[in-house]
Image (cartoon, rainbow, N blue to C red):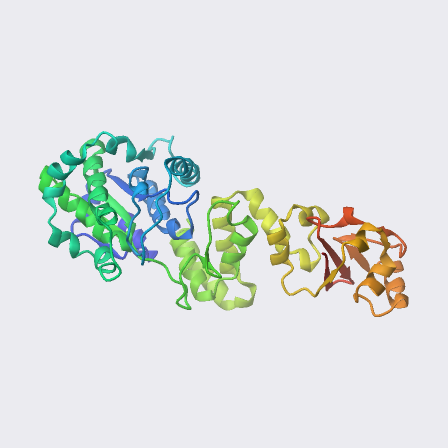
Length: 424
């Protein structure tokens, strides 16, 4: 397969400008994707165009990752119902650096065919406003710009001139890269089609050149919900915004239909291997082979092998294979997510501050056991664990030092019965 054939097989092409495949077949080509630093992290919605660039580089072409230090100051109206809040320059600079670190996990910037990272603030900071209007604005008519979907969607609610001008800025990015980096292809999500084709049009009118466009579909889950959203929030690529555990769980809990699509779009498994995994999954869907394969592959590449191993260990806490160390490494949010559905009881913090004996804690202060006799027998028989540590003395004092995140105590009765005690 060539680059375009592989993207088609993986379901990663929404729109493609005529002649693009012929141009790519002519030899090594530079192509770019833009990422605006409107947040200190990319999210799963960005992962599709990132994977386009990964395949682009693997097929011998040269990817350019544009971090929009200039366009990020404006905000792209595409796909949005209302205007973005403008970010201060220092926030934008911080976001740019964080996004660069994330892109370096996917693209090779130092090999035999290195990717390149650029910042459009480097060329826009030297552009005078009147010069821009004379040299760029005159090449794209108002009628042409109004016809774009990104503009039409906002006309009723209102669109400021600031956001309306974004199309010109992105078009100029393409023109600048065409002139200075011999870049002939721009890629992105399908909501970017209008902005990308505007750039190709500017190159044709201003430079007499020919440039091309290719977009990927905006992914939705099989139930119609927006891809990359979990309970209304984005799934981020940064560990401090979405933990590796939650990230791993997102992929692990996908439907069978979604898992097959995700294996094609978000992994680097070759087609033959994916087809074999799909067959094996169909024979034993209860084993969730596809979901596990996707969850491992994507979690390792976005975070690390160590983060994946920790996510798996955390996921297995309720099945007896987790450890005390794993529990203590979980944030409060992660702990509550891991223990979702486990019966919970809240007790006064003073119960732990006065070093209450275990027997009294489990059979008097809480209802973990219905009686002291039953609690004593199970404790002495080695059937009770606190935070995954077995306790055999009914009189051992339980203080605040045992609390996870200063608030929680996980009690295990036998192999499968758990209770979460919360100090409040």
